[in-house]
Image 1: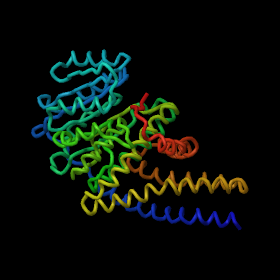
Image 2: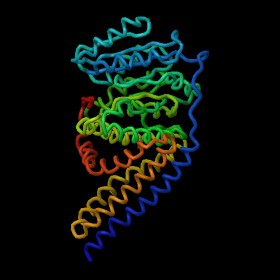
Image 3: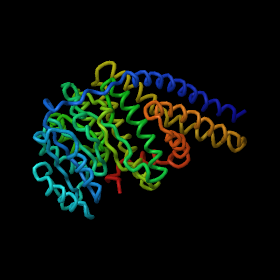
Image 4: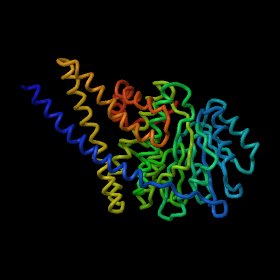
Length: 397
C-alpha cells in the first residue's frame, strides 16, 4: 500500500505534465508551420558586414572557416573579416596568416599572446567592426554560399537586433555520435528556433552562426564583458548571454532558416560531455536571467515565453522523480524496464516526424537511437552542470 501511495504521488504529476506538454507541443507545431524565412538581402542594398572568427587551437579547420566566408556571395566592397587567435598553442596562427596574406584587403588577423577566452576574442572584433551588421562564425565551421546575404536580410526590419542561423553537422560521417547529433541539431534549430522566431524571441543565437546589429552590440558590450554570475566572471555561454542582452533592450531575435553553417561536433563521448556541460551551465545561468528579461517583452511573446519556461523546466523535477520511481518499481517488477524503453521509443519516434518532414532521410533512426543513448549515458550531465555552474573555460578542448 505504501508503494502504491508513492507511485500515485509521482505518476499523477507526470501525467499532468505529459498532457500539458503535449498540448504545448501541438501549439508549437502550429507556430512551426507558420514560420517563414526572411528574404535574403540583395546585392544592391546589402548592408556593410563584418565577420568575426574567434579561434583557439583549431589548426587547419580555421582556414576552411575563413575561405568559406570569402567564397560566400556578398559584395566585396561591403565585407571585412576579422580573425582573432586567442593565444593558440598549435599551428592555428600560421593558417590564419596564410589566409590573411592571400586576401590582405578582406582578412585582418589578430593574435592574443595568451589565452583570454572566447568572449574577449569576440570583443576585439565587435569593437573594431565597421559594418552595420556583425556576424560571428566559429572557427570549426564552414558556411554555405548564400549565408551572408541570408543573415543580413532580416535586419531590414529595425526591430530585429539578432539573427540565429541554421546549424548542421560538418563531420557527420565521423561516427555514430555525429550522426545522432545531426538529427538533434535539425530538430533543435529547424524546429525550436523556427517556433521561437514566430514571436521574435529566439533564446540563443548560436556562436556557430549568428548576426547582430552592430549599434546594438555596442550598447551592451561593456556589461556583456563584465558579466558575473554568483560572483564569478562569465566566460562561457557568450552567445546566449549576448542574445539576452539584446532582448533586454527591447529588440527581437529571430531565426533565418536559409542561413546555414556546418560545424564540427564531438565524435567521442568525452568531447560530447564537455559540450553539454558548457551548454547546460549556460542554460542555467541565462534562463535565470531571461526570467527577469521576459517581462520587458510584448504581451504575446511574454506569455508564450513564460509558458515555455514553465513547461520546459518542469521536465527536471518531474523527470528525476519519475526516474526514482522507475528504479523502485523495477526492483519488484523488471517488466517496468521494458515499458520505459517502449515509452522512450514511442516519443522519440513522434519527434522524428518533424525530422522526416524537413529532411526525408533514413538518418532519423539515429534520432531514435539518440533518445536511448541520452537516457543511459547523459542523465548525469545537467545535475553536474548545475553544481559546477561557476566553471570558467571555453570547454571545447
